[in-house]
Image (tube, rainbow, N blue to C red; front, side):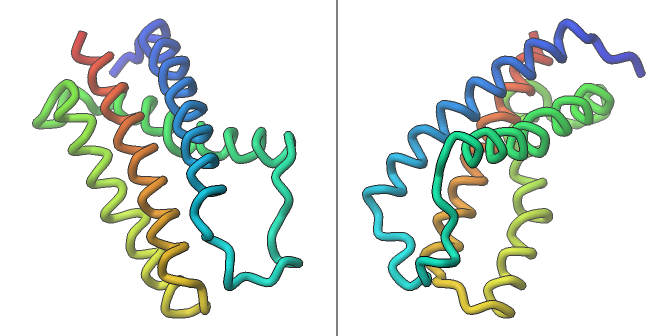
Length: 140
């Protein structure tokens, strides 16, 4: 299977822009919702430029780069195509990748359930949106 580097570049650019946009909206929303009321202040990291850059890099690699490369290799055998294929793949990755880890973490560490739900919702929005973009671009 051959990957189109031009198509992969389009996926990476549009997915990166989407991740930046969602991060901006999500961080604004986080300031309005009292997410960290139960956390000790010494455990919270201050959000500076380095925090935003490192957060973007991690999200870009796991929500855009790796899914775009893997979708590029396997999109010919995925039973759905286009935006539906991207959303179905994103939901599969979310349900079988992130949710079990979050539930196990919730049972092992005393974290507020609201915080875990907030984080899972944000990850689902990022992943499904990025996968919908990737699926759409591969359908063109």
